[in-house]
Structures are given as structure tokens and as C-alpha cells.
Length: 484
Image (cartoon, rainbow, N blue to C red; front, side, top):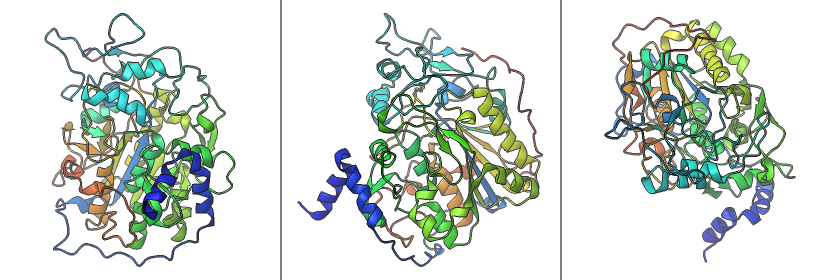
């Protein structure tokens, strides 16, 4: 067996995880590589004319909702399917004598279900998309509503994964979808839970690394076992040694900020079902704040770019937004069960209002999505692009003065499309690519170049007069019911 093969076995063995990260702690840091060149005209991908009118990109990532659970009855979208009798799809329910159909759920707090990599495979069931209730029935239901959980736990005795919301519960999200852009084929980038999804959000990959060197990293779309080891006695944090987008942004002097709301994140160590909340703020690496553990962020002296979300509000109001902003909520505003749907919508609305009322609105694109499906039903089969994804479909919204009005984007998308748009807008199409970025890692796929991935520039009309702000109330009245 080759040394490379032995390394991969060590990385993938849960029992050897402590050895893995013990070795990581003793590794020296690699020397910083020179800045990779921007693509030449001969190698530059096709970039939409007018894209450079967007000088500020804001990515707001909420938590744990499928597309059908929020927009399954939105007019014109690829929503809940109906048979010849007009009935929506029915999936097997091992806990009942009949199958389970989608239903309107007016509750502000939901339970959701397990949403790890194995749960995704069961839910998708080889393309049948009929395993959602099966997953919800088999997982633990002992998580207290006031506490937080790991991806293998649900929050209440009821099974609500077939429930959906509409404008009665989320009127502002439906208003943004009606007046701006709704993406109805946005898929989570990885068929797994929150941590891998947030790693993909900033880097296009999820891995475990033997040392602090990029070449030591091995594909890992789960990471729950390594996270448990790191929180169970090791003094040093996990190493994320592969390349993330901030490396290219920094190399080409493109400003960025990752804004974190202080509070709690949902996670338990040791696969426990119930635990006290894990603290989260800009200085604490975590599931929703992965950048502090990236070696290139540390090497480039960019840790200060990871800030409290209050700094984003100030930057928006003063016209000082960086070119790229990522925003991560705390548990209370995340919509991650058992968080309030209403509270999450209010928080997102406030962030969008802040941008709209500031000087940078005329040159900003706001992308809103949800990191994974959270166990909730969706009927669309995810495309297979590599060993990690895509994951189950999630909602996607685009809000911008150049966004098309009332447009439903049917392109196949994932959160990789955000990386692609940012790279096209600010880096001339440079990708996080081991062959060109000057910091090679063994990622299986350059996700921005996957053939099935659509182009977010299609959601914009760069010839239109920039649209005026549309300020929405953070506590809106319920909207109208949609057709069941």
C-alpha cells in the first residue's frame, strides 16, 4: 500500500481522528505563495457584460429549510407536484397506516429532522425522494425545544417534515420572491449538514487535513467525527488547510468581511442529543464561522476581517461595505429548528433594509439562501456532480437594484454559484483551482466549473434603471394563503 493510501485511511478512520489532529498541531506553516495571476483573455471564462456594476456582494446564509417547505406553493415555481386528482405527492410513513402528504404548517417553530449525509441518502432514496418521514421517525425525539442539537437529532415528538409555509408565515420572503428573483433549482452544495455546507460556502470543498499543508487534505463531506474529537479535549483547533476564496480576494486586494452574530450555534459534541448552547461570536471558530480555522486566513493576517454583525450594519449605513460580505446568524435568528421562523425573517429583513437605506444599495447584489434542507421534504432529485453533491434543494433569493422583477430562475444552481459570481465580478474569472491558484490542494472538483451549474448573472438586467429600495416591515402582517 502506498504512503498516500495509508494517509487517506488514517484520515477517514474515526478512531484515528485524535492522531490526525495531534499531527496537525505539530506541523509547521507553509510559506505564503505568490499571488496567482488573473486569467488572460485567452483563458478567461465568459463574463456577463454589466456584471461590474455590482461592486458589493452580500451573502446571507440562513439555516435548515428545503425549497418545498418555504416555496412549494409559490405561483410559477417548481413546487409541490400534483397527481391527476390534484393531490400532492405522498411518501411512506412507517409510523402510520397511510402515507404522508404535504400540509400547511402554521407553527412558528418547527422540529425538522436529521440531515446528515446518511439521512440525505435515505431521504433521496435513489431518486424516489420518499424517505423524509422514514428519517424523521427513526431519529431521537428527545431534544428539548429550548436547547440545541446535532444533525442526528430532531426537536419534538411530532413529525413535521412534510409541512410547508407560505405568505401567511413568511410574507417578506414571498414579497422578495414576487418583486425580485426566486431561484427554484438552488441545491445545497453538499449532501450533508451545516458545517460542510458552510465550508463549501467559502471554499467550494469540505475536507479533513493531516497537517497544515493543503496537499495533506482528504475529501470529507461529513466531518461530524472530527468535530467531536476537536471539542473533546484537544487544545488546538481543526486545520482547514485547503484554499478558500479569501486567499484569492486578499491576493488581488479585493476587500471582504465575514460577519457573525454573537449568540449560540446548534451543535453537540460526542453525538449527544441534548447539550447546552455552544457560544458563537466573531472570534470563535465554529460550524457557522469556519474561516478562523483556515490556514490561509491566518497566514494572510486576515482574521480581523471576521467581525461582529454590528460592523456590517455600520458599513451598510455609511457606504463602507466591502466588496464581498458573508453574514452568519446566531441560533435565535437562524430559522434552524427550534428557532422562530418569524424571528429569522425579521432579522434578514433588517439586514436587507440596512443595505437598501445605505449609499451602497445602487451597486449591491444580495443573495439569500439556506445552508441545507434540515430534514424537510423536497420533491426534486438533486443532480449528481461529484462524490459530495449536490444536496437537497433549498430556497434562493436575489435582491438588487439590477435584479429582474418577479423572475423565477429555473437554472440548476448551488452555493458554488456565489463563488463563481464573485470570481467573475472581482477576479476576472479566476477560480479556486489547484492548477492555477498557486496553492494546490487535492479537491475532487473545481465546483465553479461544473457544467450543470448555472450563472447568477442571468438573474440581473444590467440595462435597467436601478430599482429603488423596497423597505419592508420587520414585523409584517400575514400574507395571503396559497393553493394547497
